[in-house]
Length: 635
Image 1 (cartoon, one colour):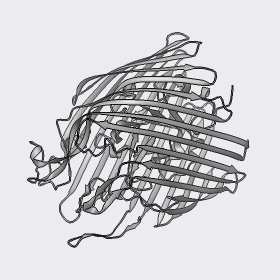
Image 2 (cartoon, rainbow, N blue to C red; image 1 turned 90 degrees about the vertical axis):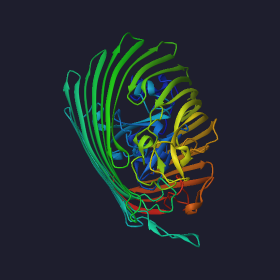
Image 3 (spheres, helix red, strand yellow; image 1 turned 135 degrees about the vertical axis):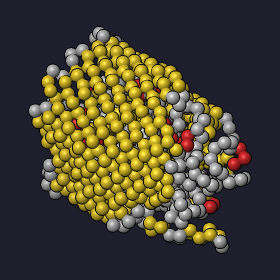
């Protein structure tokens, strides 16, 4: 068999079991387009935060509102940012307040064992939100290790605009006891945005894009014997940042935002010869203070709580068939001065059956029933098929996915007096989104050191939720509005069709232990059409053409990481603040380093090498060229 590469790693495709498919399967058995990043791959990329790391992955579009992890919307296959499900060690992290917080993942890159990215629907496994794809971040403490090990790694760097970045992570496994953790500090006074003269009566004052981000986590695990193990984590995420024009293009917008999130997680599992059982519990509490402007009373304060429980059982029925069944329950609530106080419950039950035979055929059928007091009962089926030949894997999948509106989409601005024009307004009567998706793909691994992947897909959506520019006269019974003014009101867009194509090529060549070249190229084409003339904010905000390139070059003690991104998207303008989204941009991030010893190194990193001016979200300025230098260690 030819040597192959999987995503950005040099591991043979037949050796990786993917846990995000619920039934652990080898990649070529899943019938899906899945990327796996091992911890080694992560260290060979140039990034400053988790969203910048995800941005390097083919087909993952990250619409950041600021650099260095301030805030980002994560999209896949033309989805909205709320239609991608984020998991931490298998537990849902999507925030019930707003999808804008879904990228706040409270672990450092040093704690990550691997990341699995499943493109396309997975509601039959995970329920709501898994429309465009699933990103599962798996940490060292929550996986089984065969050998005792100890790791201690991190970095310290300083850069322009008083940028300070510190990251440290550690993990130890000794005689069944696992201890892991880490912390991250990233802060800067930000770039100075000069004042803008809109007209003779309006001047927008200068401001700084400051940010202050702190994260810390600790995790413990123990393997008791007889297949019984326990793992737990507690983590904290604190952010304070300039949020001007993050959510509006209003001339009065001088927004500043602070969030604090506390995350707790527990897993108890029993693994036998032919079966395994797992109980997963998690609890998240998030506080958010949003000040629209210090010039008048405009402070919104929200506290959300999210409890999630999963019980699953996997059994091998025969040498060719496995069955998994599970139950899920969650409770979410919010206390908010502008959205009100609300509480909702959700429960789901699912079953999955996997079959394979010696001829290379694999088939997985998933069935799930969800109940939510927002949308009552929803049924989600999914069928994945793959056929393995000597150098080819042919795969196909079809399934249904669902998503309900979050607390922002349903209630934002409902309790505010005299809501300013151009602000967002929630709709309590939203229906749940539904979508049917189909895909067909081919993986080829007949070339030495090269893998090629191609996938075509389509999604037909109904009742899609988005913010639509609406006149006050057409909004009945919601909000305290100004007569005759326009607001961005959440509505169910009747239907949309998203079709696209993904192509990926990966090359990995190693001449010796200290000489290596890795190259990954990814291209995604997307087209979304709707049957309505209303102009929405997020449904068609994705790039039409998305190209990613990742190069890692190692020569003796020196290495170069170069990550590039090209986006082509529709032009948007905001005359009120004299701002616009350009039709396309080409972004390069680079890191040049030297391993001084086997344990210590030094590096120089450049964000936005070409110093281009660009935005991902209309009005939200992204950083220009930004240098930093530092040291790193791996003990």
